[in-house]
Length: 326
Ligand code: CP3
Image (tube, rainbow, N blue to C red; front, side):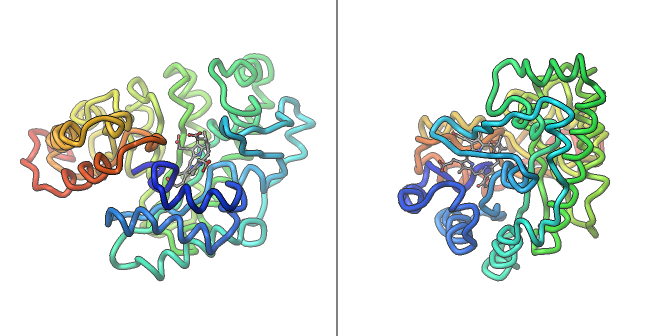
């Protein structure tokens, strides 16, 4: 599940009462423990290391704070001079705890479950840096896009190189696969996605030092972008819940798919979660399909519903009409 470790779990909330979110991310002991909490409860095939897409942004020199309303960057980056102050960094010296968490997870679950690394894609990281936090209209970012295209291009190139370095370090530390989260790229029209977010994420993926490790690309609100996402170099496309996976398969032949149950269903009844998870699996026949939610688990999700999701995902499925390599 996306946001597999998090606030819907009572054992996570207990740890969080004692430490701040950033302290939790920086403590190899606590972050490893929290990463293992959903593994112990639900026995998934993948364990995501506990961190946040903004951890590398802080290591680049930006101020990042986590308040109750989500992340805040009190000094938004809106000029060339502000971008010059951000720097590419060596993950082994600036975020060594991320490597430590991944190597411990590999020792704990290796052979039983895949260990998963991740980072934010350039467009989404740029949106936090330029907006200074979450946004509805992305007005500051789109101002830069329209009026200072060269400046935005420089920022995206820097973020792409940071993403490549971070993911390479995660793979070297024990991750079996990595995912890039382009949460806010679905905000772009297809033409602008191809002009801005796609080249940046393609540069990030091309720069990852990896042997065979698969790369997953997630975009929330990707219904109009699936063909373009398939050109990013990602092996697996992670799809939000608004698009049927049979449709995604037709439009991205030969790519693995991940997703895509509406996380909101986990707030409802377990029977409905089981029915809808089964229906989702029939879209792909379970072939070339990493069963997941279409976005992160919401706080307040019912544990009975999460269990129903895992149980339904383990049931055998009928073969789908359309094969992976259609
Ligand atoms: O289990 C996992 O998936 C690993 C942990 C993980 C977190 N953040 C922990 C977290 C992952 C993969 C992320 C990625 C992330 N962070 C994304 C991309 C994925 C997505 O959901 O779109 C984004 C956009 C962020 C930025 C971010 N961090 C936001 C918007 C928030 C607030 C979330 C909210 O619901 O209020 C965070 C904080 C955060 N990151 C929490 C967790 C468990 C909640 C913090 C808490 O304990 O108070």
